[in-house]
Length: 517
Image (tube, rainbow, N blue to C red):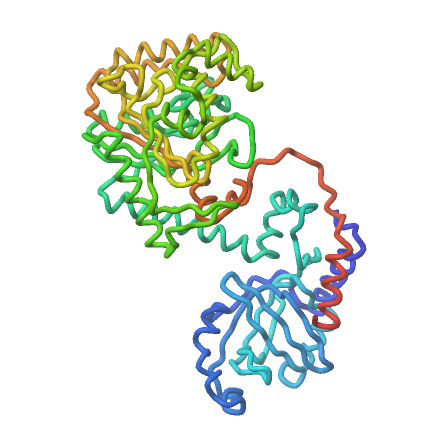
C-alpha cells in the first residue's frame, strides 16, 4: 500500500509540511459559515458594482472544505473548495498571505482539505468568492482523487469505495440526502397518525415474520444459536397483544438469499400494526402516506422510473386471479386447475415441480407473467392462503387471505394484511410450514410456540403492513439498482490493489493544478 509513484510524491509533500513545522492533520479548524450559507449571505454583492463589492472592509469569514480545483496565476491563484453544502471559489494572493503562498505551489493539491479566512467579493467575471486573508491546510490527501468516478468499468468500485464516489459525484450525495428526507417523512407521517415508534430485537431465538432463509450466529454468553432478524412482525404483534393499538418500527432486516438489482441481504423496512383495523384500512392509509410524501418532498405526481412514467393519480385494486387472467394472459381454466397450471409453467421452462403447492404455483405464475407489468400503483388482493401463513382467512372464501401487495414500477413495494389472530389456526399453519421446511423449503417459517401462546391471550382485530424503504427510495430517486440507494451494499469479497491509480484520473488532477481547466 502507498507504493504508487504519485502517492509517494504526495507523501513527500506531507513530509515537507512537517519539516516546515506544519501539522498535515491538524485538529484546529475555524468555520463561521458553510459554503452555501456564505453564498446566500453575500448574494447581495452581485447587485453592487465590482469596486464596492470588493471592499476589504467586508466582514471576515472562515470556510472549510476539500480542494477540487487549483488554478495558479503567478503570485495568485483561484481554488474551488467543496464542503457538504456547496462549491465555493477562493482567491489567494501572495500580497495577502505572504510567504504562506509558497505552500500552494509546493504542497497544496486537489483533494487536500483546507481552511480559508477572508472576505466576500465579486470577481471580474461576476462570481461570488472569498478573498483570502489567510489559509491553512487541515488535512493532506495522499491519494489522488479522480475528477470523474463513473462509467461501466468503475461501477463496482464505486460501491466498494463509496467514500470516493461521494467525493466525485455530487448526485450520489443528493440521493442519500433524499433517502434521509424520505425516512424522516415516513416517521413524521406515522407519528402524526398516532402510531408509537418502538424497537424490537434484532437477534431472534426463532426467525419468523416472513418466508426467508436466515443468517445464523452464536451467542457465547447464553451458549445458544441466534438468528438475525428477517422481520420484526411477530414481536410487533406481541405488542398489540400487550395493549398497544398502533405501533411502527423503522427496522433493518437480514435475509440470507440471492442478490440482484432489487435485493440486498441487509435492507430497511417500515412495519406498522394497527388494532381494530382491516387490510382495507391499510390500503387507504398507504395512499395517504404517498400523498404525504409527494407533498412534503414537493415531487410531481407523475414520476419517471426507468423507462416508465408512473402516474400516482391512477391507483387501482385487482384480485390475484384477475391479475393473472387480465394482465398475465393466463386462461382461467389453467389457473383454476393445479395440474394444468403446473404443466403450463413447465412448458414455459419455469423451475416448478409436483411437490409445490397450488398457491406456490400461482405465485410462480404471478412473478413470471404479471409483476413486471404493474407500472402504475396497483394493490393486488385475495392472495392464496397457503402462501400467506400469517394472514387472516377471508370469511367468505377460506382459500384466500385478507391480504394485499402494492406494486409500483413493476416491483413489490409493500405487503399488508388483516392479521391472523386465531391461535389454533396459527398453530396449524406453523405445522404446515414445518412440513414444508422438512421437505426442503429453506424459506418456510419455523414453529414459534411462544407467539402462538401470545395469540392465545387474545389479539384484537389487527391489520399490519411492511413497506420496503430501499425500494421506496429507488422509486422516488429513479435509481436502477438497490446498490445505488444503500451506502455500503453487500459485495463479493475481493483483494484490491490499492496502489493502482488510473493514469487518466491522476493526469486530470495534474492538469487542473497547473493549468486550471
